[in-house]
Amino acid sequence: MDGFRIPTARVIPKSMHRFRSISALVVFLITASTVFADRPNVLLICVDDLRPELNCFGKSYIESPNIDSLAASGRAFHRHYVQSPTCGASRYTLLTGLYGSSSNGALFDRAKRMQKDSGAVPPSMPAWFRKHGYRTVSVGKVSHHPGGRGGSDWDDEAMPEMPNSWDRHLLPAGPWQHPRGWMHGLAHGEIRKNAKEMDVFQSVDGDDSIYPDGISVDEALRQLDQLSAADQPPFFLAVGILRPHLPFGAPAKYMKPYIDVELPPIPHPEKPQGKTTWHSSGEFMKYNRWGRNPNDDEAFATEVRRHYAACVTYADAQVGRVLKRLEESGQADNTIVVLWGDHGWNLGEHAIWGKHCLFEESLRSPLIIRHPGMKRAGKSTDGIVETLDVFPTLCELAGVRVPAFVQGRSLRPLLENEDAEGHPAIAYRNNAKTIRTDTHRLIVHKDGFVELYDHRNPDAETANLATSDNRPDALIEELVGQMNQRLNGGN
Image (cartoon, rainbow, N blue to C red; front, side, top):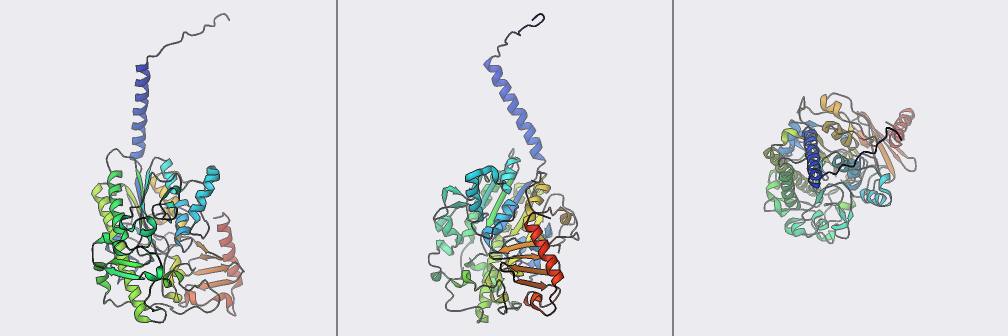
């Protein structure tokens, strides 16, 4: 024990402990603020049932000045495809970066898995950004249920659709009483009870707030003001816009441009022959249609299309309100902006009025990305991309580590050069799955039946090459292999 001495205990005054704690906190906050200062904000705008029915996507009869302006300052992806032509399944992929089921309950099923073993479920995109210092807020319809809760009226706090993802997940229901009422609301608080008693379209005089999006975007603006205040961490704000979802209701001022507009003819309006993913448009047909059917009533089909267009212009106005407030906040130059449509919508093509099929019109939707320091802004790209790619893209643009579990690819090459190559897109619905390449679409049904369409041919998705005398078996085999490899975790 020679030479060994037990050191005398040193008593540190409580005031010194307090000083050291405060000092450590100050150092942490200064360090954190320095790190966060280099991180751009994220503004994600999700629009429901929006096909590429926009001026900036080549539809010159549509008035969409605000989305057009965003495209002019960013990159419009003219061949973006969703993973599933239905709200819940498509949003599952956007918010998780993973392939999933084709069920609208995909996110709620994920929440149930998290209850059993949260460690076995990869974090969502907002949860990942939250983990990396972001304040995450959702307003409107971002996940499948507006406001992100379950229960009979979709407002049960004990049933979050996306646990541990949002600091605030908001949906002001206003006169529509609750999120379920808001979701299918018409003017002045009309709630869908029996769909047969609710008009399939409507246009009523009044300001934006007489329809559901008006009040939810009011809340989005309040949240944007709070998130943009000085000394706040970077934000991840998701704003979900309902229109042009059914029923097609918008203030009359948005209908005016379309009252007398001449619409182009509906391409391939006939019901397809043979086996396809065609359906009888049940979501649309269950509403009050005054005894009319757009498939055999051209004048009524035109009225439906005009009301859809009015809803697009109403949605565009809401996008404009959000983008204007972002500019006023002083944060626009430090914010990544993404506008994403959750799927397309058939407006009479293949005699379908709705989504839920694996035809081009239901799977293709708008995607626009703008980021700080962007080069070659305003140039659109025809490279094929998919919703799966949004999660890794946002991580890379924000300087957040891309998690190993995501199954998409960063779109940064296409953001830097609009002529860069895209990649095939995968989708699925019920008992069928599909791959879209630069030239073809292959659909494989659960029973093995195959549809193959050549998009270089004017007949496109009306002539099934797989049932022709010259069936291209080698190409079918190649595309089936690519699709299965992707769905089984390969790239």
